Image (cartoon, rainbow, N blue to C red; front, side, top):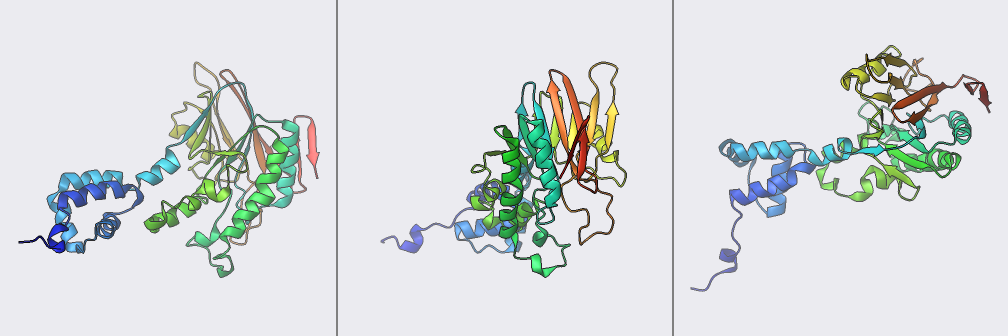
Amino acid sequence: MAETVQDAVATPTVEEALDAALQIAPACRTLRQVAGEVNESLGLDWTAAKWRGIWKHEASAKWRVEKRLGEAHNRHVHGQKLHLRGNLRGADINDIHVPYQDADAIRLAAKIIRWWQPNVLVYNGDLNDFPGLSKWDPNPARKYRMQDEVDELQADVLIPLNVAAGKCRKIALPGNHDLRLLKMLWANPELFSVRALQLPELWQTDQLGIEYAGYAVVVNDRLENSHGTRVSAMSGYAAKAELVKRGYSISTITGHVHRAGRHEFQPPYGPLIVGQESPCLCNLEPEYMVDPNWVQGLTLWETRAADVWIEAVTFGRDYTAQVGDKRFGL
């Protein structure tokens, strides 16, 4: 008897479906998302009950799939530490939070960067705020302005600061507000692989001569620049928590808290370990908060062999600042 077309197209086996699940898992957050993606890619109509039965009877395969859930996100956020070597002079820019940036604070930062002449300029996270992607944002006027905010970041922040820094190495890291975009992609895994929606492409880092590091910039294994995850209501406490997190093994410059606190630890042997909170360049009077305990400014640093020098430069309300005996103003 001649073979029919229907007979020739065999239904995928459970084993084949589990192989597909293992490949799809990195872009998904849950087993339910994995099941839905496998059904669609293999043309299956398996119900949620059938998938529960598969996970129950294939415990080893389930464990392997669960282990890979969100792996693409983890590589994007935590898998990239950019290591630098040498005697370097750097500047860290933190927490601009476009569209809540302070234009005058950015102008003052540009003046200081131009004078400092760094080898490395680090955009250390929360370049954008992405309020429209936040569940906390009550203002509907911002829900559909994301491209405007990205354009604003490029024109009003990245380009003028790049010009001020001159021909130095420029590196951008994501902060928790920038990663609101990534969380949106988690919730819509069918969009996760669209390159134009990834932060480096959205910010056009290649066109602007900026490298993208997913988590941190480490200099001589003595200084780690990262956005930071620790929070405290008291200045300096977050800096200490970042050092504790790393076992006092490396000095750190972190943002996130919009302050300029500092914590120092002198081990019995070896150089001083410093935890420095890097101040912000966003508006000090945001519409969503009353009288925040924030400080504007930037952080300068220098490395020589095993030694690390770090100074947070804070701005006055009149947009003045001082580094040593050098004063700056608008």
